[in-house]
Every structure is written in C-alpha cells, then in structure tokens.
Length: 221
Image (cartoon, rainbow, N blue to C red; front, top):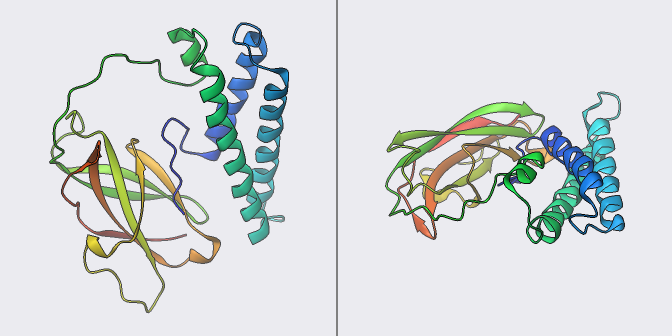
C-alpha cells in the first residue's frame, strides 16, 4: 500500500518528531491561535498511541503481523488527525513565516509559479527502509527538476509473486500514488515480503501527464 506524504515527513520517526514539535509549539501558542484544549489533548493521545505501536512493531520480540497492522492503523489515525488539525488551526489564524517554520511546515508562497506541459522522463531508484518498506528516489532521465512544469510524480507500481508473469510495460501497472517529493516511501502488505515490485513514473501537472519513465523493479524486503 502506498503512503502519500506531501508535507508530512517521509518516515514514521519523522512524523512523530513533527507531532512532538506541534505539541510543544501549540502548548505555548494555544490561546493566540484559538486551539481548544481538547484538540491538543487528542493530538497528544494520537501521538502517544502511534509511538507505542511503532516501538512494538520494531521490537524483535514483539513484532508480529498483528503488531505491524496495528502500527499502520495508529499512524493512519495520527496523520489523519494532523491533517485536520493543520486545516482547522494553522490555516485560519494569522501565522507568520517563523510560525510555520517552527511547526516544520513551509511558509505560504502567494505567487503562483507559471508552468507548461511536463515533458521530462523520470525513473525511480529504490532503497531499503525497513520490513515491507521501500524508499523511492526520483531520477531524471531527461529534463530537469527545476522545470516549473514538473509539479509532481505519479508513481505506478505492481507487486508480482514468484512464478507470476511480470508486467511487460508501464501500462500493465495498476496501482499508483501521487507525490511532490523527490524521495518517498511505499509500505507494502506483510505478505508481500519476497515478492517483486515493478515501478514506472509519470510527471503530473494539474492533470497533464508527461511521458512514461522506464520500467524498473526491486525485491520487497
């Protein structure tokens, strides 16, 4: 299953660190930003549950398929709450650039960047993150990352078990997720360990798609 992060950190440890920063900053700015005490209490509780679940899932003696599933559920709940928390309390009050930076967020840029049709080709370089997780790094085959037309990346993928027919071309890939990051993480199901993941990338810009990148593959740890 793909994890789409956008402004969230790519790793679970990074998400916990961001939540810690939010709790610390919001505790001191709670009145200024009109943050209800209950919302801050809930954020702290979600962060605590996710941290405990991650420790259990990473521990050699307590790591089980159930622990892994519970860890994913805890982080899904935490990130969903953080998205809602950001929408409710960080977009409405008059935050200045230093406030956004203290929260680990990028300051708002009110000037739109002009862009055209994406024409670059991108592939991915994979690297190990942990059990059932692969990191993907965008590598430009043609074009440049500085081109304003290259707004984001649609990463298509497919998991193939030993003995199954692999995809012949990018059009045979059925699952995808969108990211604006040049590095991101894909978290696969527990049972996908030992299978092969095939990838191909298309640059996307407001619904406009660039050409396919080459088909690549990697073994799921």
